[in-house]
Each structure stands twice: as structure tokens, then as C-alpha cells.
Length: 295
Picture (cartoon, rainbow, N blue to C red):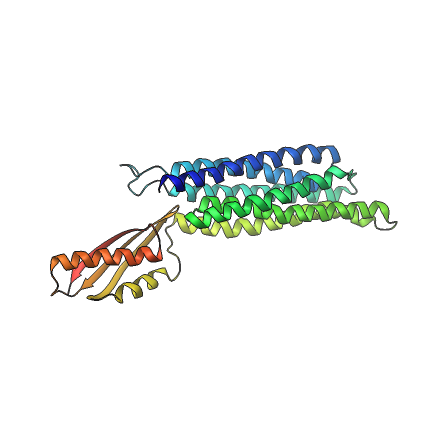
């Protein structure tokens, strides 16, 4: 990976840490002051986002290190491992939120002080989350970074969960204003449960992606696309034994190609270079190894 790409990824990961730190602090203060389970649940969510962001920043920096004797394919798997750890953190958060919310519902009415700051901290959170998630998604897509994509998912999830908390707080206000609507006072705890469901859904999706990467599961249909593209080249008789594995942002591809046995060695070498170029057209910066065979 070039220095510009590494710098841009590290900058994105670093800004994610700063954003998560600020949001966690604000939510903890306001959540404790008002007694809102929804805000406290969001604080816990943002706290684990902070841990995940720190892990991501480390993984992105580590994955940029060049290959060595112990890691001949480079350090890209650190990004995949980071995303897997983030998945576990998300599931842990969801479990804690569900248990706490159920306890509050069973215990009955819990006094919650809904203030200007209750809404202010959640609205600020939504604005920051929208900005950070867009930036992280952009860089993740640009450099095929699973670690940054996982971080972007965290902030993207926070947007919806924060919106649910705002709705829950508004319902609590209605229960105080309108006689006979006391049941709305439980909306804060219900909002926390909805947050947990959202977190679990995102975790399952992210978990599948990270496990597939760690187990070297090739993207569906990619081998067929490579085979079709390579076999369309002149002098190529057949393309087989296509092996694909991803390490963080980079793909490593091996394939066997049956060539016309009448062509000279120089032409065969030129053909292998052309094969590498057409595959890089499908997957930029892919590390391609071609095994030529004569027919």
C-alpha cells in the first residue's frame, strides 16, 4: 500500500477515535444526570465504539506494514481480525442493553428527567455519526478496508439507535403531559431494546463478512468472472485452479492457464503479464500469480 493510502486510512481511523471519545463522554454525563436508560445504553454503545475505534486504528496501522518472513502475505489479516473483535463487542453491548431494559420494565416506572440536554446530546450524536460514517464508508470503499467498514457500521448503527432514543425521550415527555398515557413512560426502556435488536442485526451481518474473510472464502462469482475474462485473451486455451484469498485491503490470486504450445517463451511471458493486467482491472492492486501450461 502506498504512503498516501496509508495516511488517509490512518487519518480516518484516528478521527473515529476522537469522535467516539467525545460522544461517549457526553452521553455518560447526560445519561447519569437524567437517569435515561436509553441515553445510558447509547453511552455504553459509544463506549464500545471507542474501544472498537482504537482497535481499528491499531489494525489499520499494522496492516500497512510490509510482508516479512513470518507474514509472507503481509499483515492485512489484522484488519479482518479487528472487524471480528468489533462484532463480539457489539454482541456484548446488545446483551447488556437487553438485560438492563428488561429489568427496568419489570421493576415498573422509573423516574427519568427529560431536559434540553437529553435531546441536545442525542442530536449532536446523530450529526457526528452521519459525518463520521460517511467519511469512513468512503475511505473503506476506496481502499477495500474491512476494518474501516466495520467502524463505519458502528457509527451508522448509532444514527438509527440515537433516533430511537430521541423518540423514546419524547414519549416520556408525552406521558408526563397527557393524563392516562403513563404507559409511554416505558418507551425509554423499549427504545433501548430496539437499539439492541439493531445492534444484533448489524453484528450478524458484520460477523459473517469477517468470518468469511478469515476463512478465505472467495467473493461469490469472482472466480467465474476471472475465468471468463482470461479465456477471452488470444492464445489462452483454458483457465483453471483459480485460488482467491483476501488479506485486509488486498487480494492474492493464483491461477493456472493453458496456452497455445506453439508460441515462443517471450510471447508466453508477455501473455502472463497481460493476464495480470486484466485481473488487476477487475481487482486493483491484486497480487496475481500465473502458472502457464502448454497445450
